[in-house]
Amino acid sequence: MASDRRDDPSPPTASDGHDDELSRRSFLRWSALAGAGASLTGLPSAPQAAAQGVDLGDAKFSVKEATIAEMQAEMAAGRLHALGLTRRYLNRIEAIDRRGPGVNAVLAVNPDAEDIARDLDRERRTSGPRGPLHGIPIILKDNIDTGDGMMTTAGSLALVGAPALQDSTVAARLRAAGAVILGKANLSEWANFRGFSSSSGWSGLGGQCRNPYVLDRNPCGSSSGSSAAVAASLCAAALGTETDGSVVCPSSANNVVGIKPTVGLTSRAGVVPIAAAQDTVGTHGRMVADAAAVLGALTGVDPRDPATAASAGNSFTDYTQFVDPNGLAGARIGVARQLTGGITDETAAVFEAALQAMRDAGATVIDVAIPSFDEFANDISEIVVLVYEFKRDLNAYLATRAGVPVADMADVIAFNLANADDELLYFGQEWFELAQAEIFSEADYVNALATGPRLAGPEGIDAALAADNLDALVAPTNTPPWPTDLVNGDCFLFGSSSYAAVAGYPAISVPAGFTFGLPLGITLMAGAWQEPALIKVASGFEAATQARRAPEYLPTLELPRGAKRRRLDPGVMRKHFGFQVDAFLKGRIRRPHYL
Image (cartoon, rainbow, N blue to C red; front, side, top):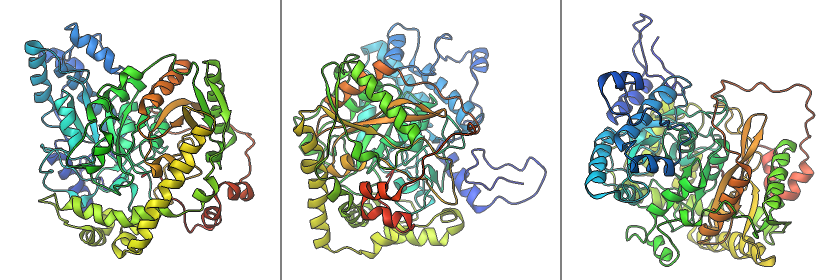
């Protein structure tokens, strides 16, 4: 029988002899992927390529866990070429993402990737490299426009059609830096701002992305495919986007580094939006230096995004200069324990070990209080802002697209209803419906736009940093990856992303360790434009702990027997989260997460 599962990473086939007609869902999905250049049929394996005389670069060089600096060193020495490097990654995508474990992180590959790499090799020979990203293959989350042969869909069948008319600013800047745009990553559809009970990493077009450490565990969202692709060495680095948690959470879940920049440091022009107040384009890398190298290529004022005007004088084109293996020596780090409500004993143990590693590396680590915590926990300003801005910003973006089935949010809602078996089978579109209904007034919005950032920024992160002259705050990023559950959605216990998200401040998630074989990260956060300070302490922590390790693609997790578990205490939860816990325990409401 032909495949009819959106979480099935293999294309539909009738090889078993049945004459069943392909479902509309499978047909749309796979014809769209093929049209976007996702088919890798005929791409030679490394042995086949050698037999065919196809250059895959030096046979001794492996892209698995390789850093950008290592790739550049090999290319500078003439032992590796961008074309060979690109083909190695394409072969790895075929072997690991399409077949083999079936991570399902890559939604489409760029049909022009090899030509781009070939031209960059020619340029290197004639005039030298453009910079640290010359010839480096990078994957973009599929809500980031590329004006080429690839579509930009946000994972939705509603955007299947013609590609975007032009590059997003960040894509154009990557090209200018000499990067090879290798493909588009799967994601939580519409950046996880569609329904209340979503499964992170699921999209109607791409199906369910898997966690490369344990395949039935969730990769977190919405930049799920970006971080999973980096973790599985399917690319050198990747771009993701975050509104609240969607760079840092998947970075933690997939054991990679994620840099969520200050809002306005990177342009959002040509990026499918949620809300301009909080949206930002960030980077994923296996090491801090890799994520920092990509970040530097993205910065600069962009007339297409007015928010970037504030970055003038606050940005750098080289963030690797702040990478320091001794970056924790003399640093002052504040432990934001208020952000850990709902933490389990196992996560707490990894976090405490991380704090001790900081002390051992020369940092002063002290517990701090965030003055606005109680008020922020009971405030709904973030929900008001996101819902109010969503319709406005999405409609403005859709006006830039042509040759797709929808022109505005109302069209998207109608499309989903008309294609409910494809798009609404597992969860609904409540966020779309609330935004379309305009449930908040302009006065509500203006008040929320002032209140939320004030509580999170000046009266939150800034106040906590200033009180003890701190370089950064630290908290666990979130829980270990949970089992993917398309029926009930994500298992959300806690996350520490909201303060930096609502304030528009930078945050970095860096691998911290494992529990039960599942990755955990810590998030470091600071004030606006403090990416250099965060990169310094994050790289110091990375050097001190070396917590990153390659995935093993386990099909499932064998848990030990007899472990004593801590009972959920609603009283403790209520102390941390106020009214939201009462609603959460009754299953009615929770703060948006992984957006």
